[in-house]
Length: 313
Image 1 (cartoon, helix red, strand yellow):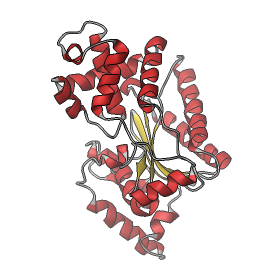
Image 2 (cartoon, one colour; image 1 turned 120 degrees about the vertical axis):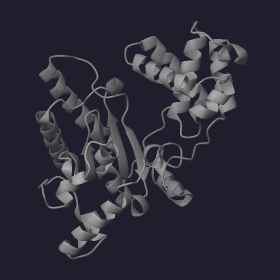
Image 3 (cartoon, helix red, strand yellow; image 1 turned 30 degrees about the vertical axis):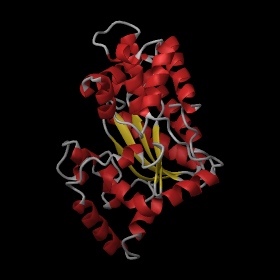
């Protein structure tokens, strides 16, 4: 779909996800992680935002980030540009470090922030990297336990939800995290509950859109998406579904899969049924196409034009 405007208002809280380009690492050693910490601290001092939780995995980063007056886009542009510059100088290379635009889900903090903090700090456990979250050194969890000092990490909001007494609050936090040890991946933290960018009920969504002077968008149906792609590539639906890797048929299918994957309103399973294609093959095609967009300007323009057309349906 056409890229939606970021929703910004002071005190908004987001689940931010940064992924390495084509799944490649964003951290190569501990010095890189410490540099990222330093850039976070400098960014907080400059832009006045807060980080309530974070986890630096090898090829991606999770953060629970609350903005002030400066919008998230400016914060992330500064952070990603400066960190990419660090890595490229160190590795004597050029190009992208992160995969496209960062993912940001605006969430109802009163309803979801506590659970999001736990979810982020348990990421290494879900990935089978460690048995206990405190065994992973590159997240905010150890700071919540008092085992590490990270002056740029904001812990008081979450801690205060358990008790006004620090010792009691810390125990409550530990028990809360332990209760989520077997929690599986939660799609709503990655795709939201509305428009692929908001996590909250209808009242929350209407309120934040009003604050941001935006309106709720209604997505085109999957049928319309496929018809739009067919018209753009001058294909029939049967040609779009036909076997083979000949162009433009294969490209059109890959674009359809990418557009579906970008949206919270459709699924690749649904697309697979429509095209009578294997879901895994569609997913791989979308991933390959996403990688090609960085270096292929003409292809990138085609996809952007289709996003605009669907937005205007």
